[in-house]
Length: 180
Image (cartoon, rainbow, N blue to C red; front, side, top):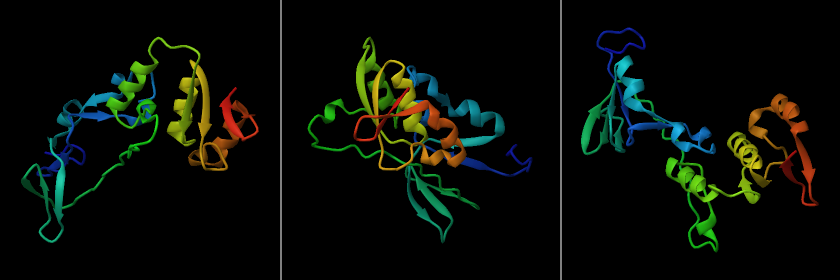
């Protein structure tokens, strides 16, 4: 029974390869393990089934997805594929690039920074997650924030950008930004 709508006979299935929901916007924090929640703990109480698999095919004509070698029928399908970082290959110094796109990536960054003080870091991307990461890292070291956009925090909307702008100051002749 799906408790979300109270419909008897409503069956909701989440197909996801991991047993945890990872809150990616929080992976920049010093304890990335706190950014994961067991899916069973969330889904069980509301009657949602979790199939640990990856979808490899969708047949819209037959209303079937193939996941883990099994066909799963559906009446309605919500595709929420998310995104995945593409790591650069063969780039000199790539071993010193860290991402916060995955829990493993965040763990690597946390381990790399453990015990370090007064480090320098470059954060690529001045959207919500980039600003959050830059702000967290700036509390422990020097940060250069790099983005193609002409406006820092452009994803936050004009009102939030205006309110946040006083927290940032011009830095250097290249127009880079650093937390105050």
